[in-house]
Length: 399
Image (tube, rainbow, N blue to C red; front, side, top):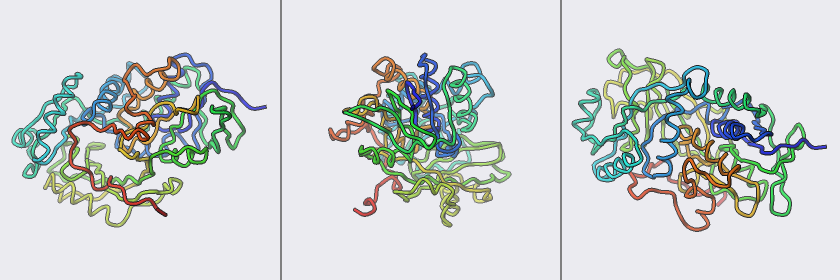
């Protein structure tokens, strides 16, 4: 006889465990989270975990804004050790996008975010070691920073279990079962679980899992590469977090003397089960070029290490959140396109509200529904920045 659950959450990354925690906190009695490996063994454990609010679309910004107090006030709200490191944050754009940045700052200020637009000279005064010759404007968030990925996932796990959820690691979901237009449960290597609701939050694995149940997910798995350097003595004090839209990358301080830098990568349709694969040989050089272009003193930095993660990238580079129309009881929280960590507390709250109450109330996530793709809509904001070359899709393999 199959085991039963009210809700099964598939995927033990930060969004999956946040959803399980929120459901249990709402009083859902039988919440079971299933993770094929260890918690945070996919993209979450390798996330740079930026905690910032700057987006070019209001939905993501509101999700980030609703999530920010959870990271900032973690000890009081979640218990356990703090997970947030305050650094300050800047987002820089080239001159053609300066007006768009200022409009986006106005949008962010309108929802309550503490942010201001800076001129290149003002950015130089704030970070004197930065090269601003190619910068048109910057958005500054003095309150932002980054989180500890492992401690964040563990904190959500601890609270979820305290509230009655079951968290099962090393338990792969082999199939999602449905009958007559509704979900009836999942199959695992350890046996079947009957459930009235299933949430797919499996990151880069979601594409395959949905395809195997006959659902096309408009997303593709993509590699995410990160290089870590030791800063030179001249930069011993940590710099702020930079999202560098001029170069299509980002970097942030880590552990006092280290800096993480995102290396643009164009490897799509990756098999996420090859997560242990190392970085391409050119990654260290690319990371060095990005850092030294923005902070010339980084020429004296030394390579520490590098690593690769995978995530599902949707066709419009925004998350897919909500119910699947035509399959009652099936919900998606996936395809975060490399940008899901900072919004995970609000994603958990919204998905729990949707499942329990029938609608998300913390933030209206309707623009992130799966149906937008069939309707030819996008979740993009009206004032975008330059497209990142590593997110311009090549043709699908076999196309």
